[in-house]
Image (cartoon, rainbow, N blue to C red; front, side, top):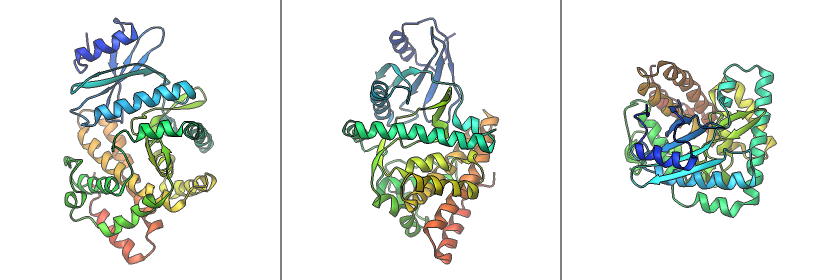
Length: 350
């Protein structure tokens, strides 16, 4: 039986590209905004990513960017990202990308049960994957920059950073809220302490920029034997590289934020990056992900209780990361306490 969630013409278009009409499709559970299916085709299974406009109004931009990024990466640095196999687009309806299945287990999954020595090995492997990514960005910088700048989507500007903070300040107390992506941030969250937010984002606006993955989270690093393959290239951007390290190092499965922060400071020093910019990135990402965790916990509370429980566990650690990072940027005790109180008022009770 065809999966009723799969548009018929999407299935037909992708199947034509793969050349295997009989292969069964089954949905995959994902932390991402898009839909994923595992297609058990021969000789190797394939992952199909579906981008739908009712889920993401920018679906076509993200699809196009990811398809082109994977094509370039596969040609010039094979093994860093999945091989793209087929792409199709029905304007206004959906877009789809079929790609090599690179593995079943993410770094996030493996960290859940990892020993300290396994954590250390995992971090070294993740940094090696990032080193390979940096090498290809240095070699093909103009091509990747052009790809990242094809739309305004995912650019790191004052406006986009303010929108992320506004969204977090609205969705933490109300997981059903859906602020318009183009609305004025200061109107969306009129009670937010915007003078303090200005202090938090300033290092990101003043730091040198490179091509970044813009989602270098353990959720997007997949084990393939003893290497990590990077997935989800739809948000490729030009931004301070500290953003990628914030995605990697603030993930809750590394352990308590106070212990992880010491490790993060060492990594940032080794990478010759700016610690204040890392803290700014960590503050924004952790608050954004806390809000996302709250929204998904609420959405999945009846349909997928185990996954809802995972988000419930992540949420307080992300909020702890935010307070830790903010404390590194705001040294004045009274000012820091004002920010702490503002965010504590938003902390969900569940």
